[in-house]
Image 1 (cartoon, helix red, strand yellow):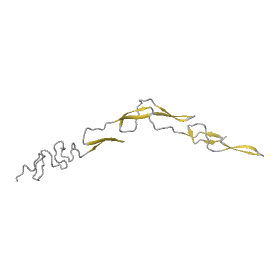
Image 2 (spheres, one colour; image 1 turned 180 degrees about the vertical axis):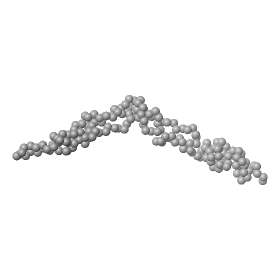
Image 3 (cartoon, rainbow, N blue to C red; image 1 turned 120 degrees about the horizontal axis):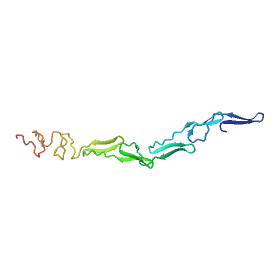
Image 4 (cartoon, rainbow, N blue to C red; image 1 turned 30 degrees about the vertical axis):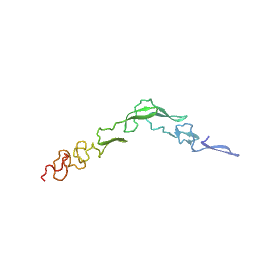
Length: 173
């Protein structure tokens, strides 16, 4: 018995003294079993969790933790903000990638752990880089200067402010 300290004395015979040693109660679902009053007493229950939403977790006293797949097609959450329609399939949770395209050619569309990101981009012919309401495709002849755009007021400054191909056409020479 692991819960007794056994000894034998020629004058007094055998003695079996209870101890408080660690032991194994034979149940695979407990840990830290200890001896008490000559018997092995179950310790704390083990936690059987694989943190997988697509399994049912339990403990078998003979074998320990058991993880059984739920039915394929069971709704789950894969924890990824970039997927939708998450379902279990053979013990794994996954979904379909979401479409982050906002239809704006002036944004870089992507997805990270928190969801869609539509990051403004500049330097393309389709984007209004200077904030004047016009892009190169819309006729802005200098998309780095917000004072130059189609039909802007011409200023006598040696620059084509209204993007008509002429400089200072309304100025007296």
